[in-house]
Image 1 (spheres, rainbow, N blue to C red):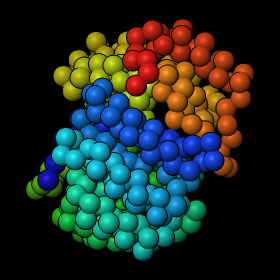
Image 2 (image 1 turned 90 degrees about the vertical axis):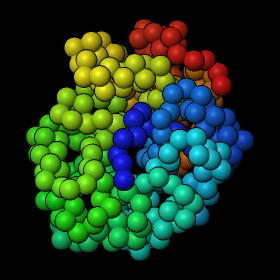
Image 3 (image 1 turned 135 degrees about the horizontal axis):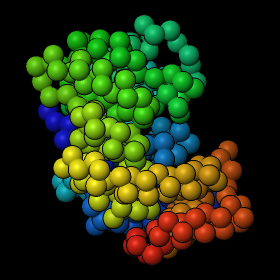
Image 4 (image 1 turned 120 degrees about the vertical axis):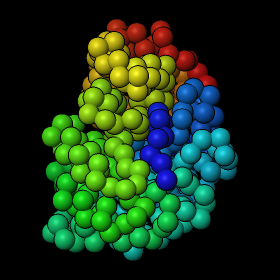
Amino acid sequence: MTTSYGLIHSPVVPFAADRSIDYATFERVIAFHLAHGADALAVPMHVAESVSLSDIEQREVLAFVMRQVGTRVPVLAHTSDSGTVIAADRARHAESLGVAAIIATVPYYWSPPQPMVLEHLATIGAAVSIPYLAWNCPGDMGNKGVSLDIACKLADRLPNFAGVVDSSLDWQYMIDLLRMAQGLKRPFGMISGTDYMVSSGAVGGRAVVSELAGVAPRLARTLHDLCVAEKYFDARAAQERMAAVRQAVRAPGVAGLKSALRLLGRDCGPVRQPVPVAQAADEARLAAELERIGILRDEPRGW
């Protein structure tokens, strides 16, 4: 069992004009990530509008990615859902496809007490034998997350509980989590769930799920490699630049990522309702900011 997945790219799911999944473009998306430094793929994460995909579509997307990737890199499957039974069944399906690991977060929509959050996550993990990662993303989940207490109890109950994908940027949480992991007699890791790799790497994280690797794969690779080498002072410029990309892409909202890809010649279509599309003025401001940061000059253009 391993959590040494390195630089994990998180691809978007492209849509056609009618908002159906554009599999022809999706094939190009996956090929792009594989050709531009992905050590592993994580699909379909929130950046792929996973909550706007039906259960059938999520399974089809994962199966499609597995066919495209084969054995070239590990694939981590995001199987979260508001319903425990659905998420656990989705995890079993992912395991049957041959994925390397599954990722799940706290329930969507529902706000159960902590004991039920634990049972939700434990049931998903117990449904499979492959490595299981809990995703702590309180900023996306109404300040609900995978508490340190829940992580400890999952580690006690599940031999395949392999670590936490952390998007909290909470240094105390990250430090306490890895201190807890030292008592385990099996591999356990922390994976950064954001492109702020220095924060995670400085306390012991050695992998990252990058939502911006599709926009700036060269910058993502440089930043990742410097952090893995523990050259954090040298990584400062790359981290500040990546932070600027993140702020620019997030400014128009969820649609900002697809707007950035379109500006780089990799059009992945619109976002799905109810997410609002980016307006022309938003895209113009994004183009100006990406030009200022140098992304339109230094990163790959087209497929």
